[in-house]
Image (tube, rainbow, N blue to C red; front, top):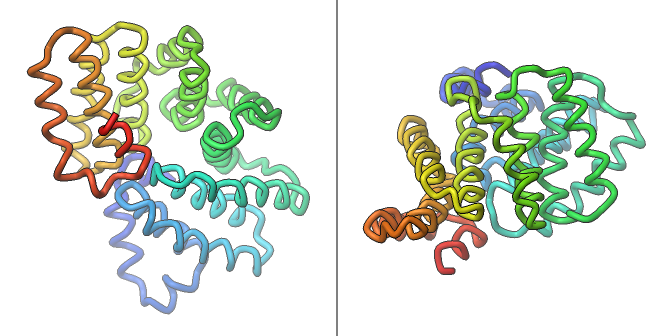
Amino acid sequence: MMLSIQGRVATLMQWINALPPEIAGQNPWLLFWQGICVIPESPGTAKPIFQKALEQFELENDPMGCFMALSGIMDSITLQFSVFQELDAYIDRYSKFEDRFGEISHPDIRLKLTSSMLSALVLRRPDSQTVKKWKQRGWDILTHVRDASKTVPIFSPLIILHIFKGELQSAGHLVKMFADVSHQKTAPLSYLILQDLKVFHSWLSGDFEKGLSAVQKGMTVEKETGIRLIFLGLRVHGAAAAIGLGRLDKAEQLLDQIPPFLEHQGIWMQGLYHI
């Protein structure tokens, strides 16, 4: 997983594309990694790739493959920021896989699956007991994985959950846990999501300068990687922080960057702009 964590998905995709199509298109693990390569820029394109991989993993009765492909499908839905109802079927699908295969013990797969399930549950079933179970799994992972950068995808949805519930102090505690996380050690998309959440939390808690600092960090990584999934969120939340400081020129500058990219954003993100 190191190439994807380091953001070197283009290199990984080149390797896969160098293989004959009859191999790359029929091997479920190669399909899975194709999905991983595509999802940072086009989660809608990645979804059917993960779905095809899942079909083949099920035929092969491969538990690790089933859990990883399921995780990829859920991520591809959440990262489109559009129709979250689709997540329901896959949340329930996980329960069936757990009944069939048992809980997964591999640490990397457990980490990725926990991140995906928490994201899906926070968006669809935030008050369910299942969220509490996966939240505890996240904390359990943190006790064994000392590198905070690797656990950013797990705790980002928990930050969202606390913000949605108005628990800004709890959200702030989680944000501070990742204050020293660098983009060199974190997957670019995870880092961008974290910066957007920092901006969002800083705006709501009145720490506007910190919010604008996170915007700048996010936009720098965005420019370096070309990943624009969080493009609108960074700028809308950043504009709100700028308005809080009375810097209307900065807010206008950020908002003026959005229209050319608006149609490529999900319904949720478009709503942020129009609000």
